[in-house]
Image (cartoon, rainbow, N blue to C red; front, side, top):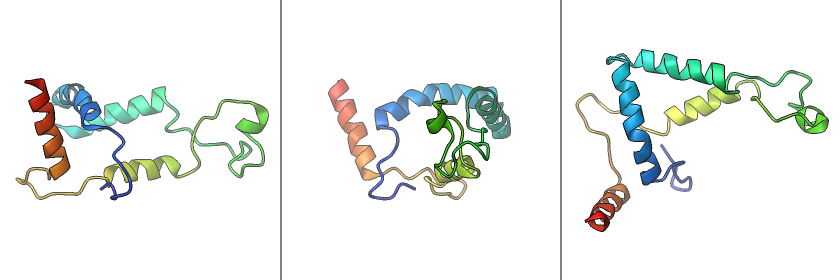
Length: 119
């Protein structure tokens, strides 16, 4: 969960723009989220540097590496990608089956305000 001092990475309107594509992807998985996760992590592996780890000689200690040699900054320190993944997962609390996700009062008021502005 976000701490009070850490704002969410996305505004409510930005989050809303992700909703339709994510629902479509979830529907493509036919109810098996493992398929969705497989596709997502396969994409990260093939198309991003999420699975790239700095080589030992690439400046993990700051003494040399990409910045010193002028190469593009790419990849993560060992364990850093996993930390990002776990931190992302832990932003949201687990809930018991059958209970709807908790919505903060500020999110409700923002939703109401945007509906009023739209009408």
